[in-house]
Image (cartoon, rainbow, N blue to C red; front, side, top):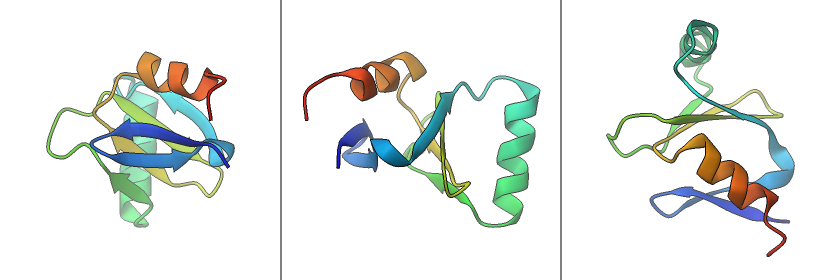
Length: 80
């Protein structure tokens, strides 16, 4: 199991991640709002601006203050 740092000491299982997207587009914001209505949002941004949304295979949305590019690079790294 490969754990990826998503900021502020939080990690996520890389095998469970479906995508990492920017929260700037309207469709992503709608998805986040819908997920909030059914309690499927995990906010690990610690009060900072959300810069990345991690979507898991269990349809949970993880809001992170790390950049999308930084998380993607950590997920693609060969180190475990």
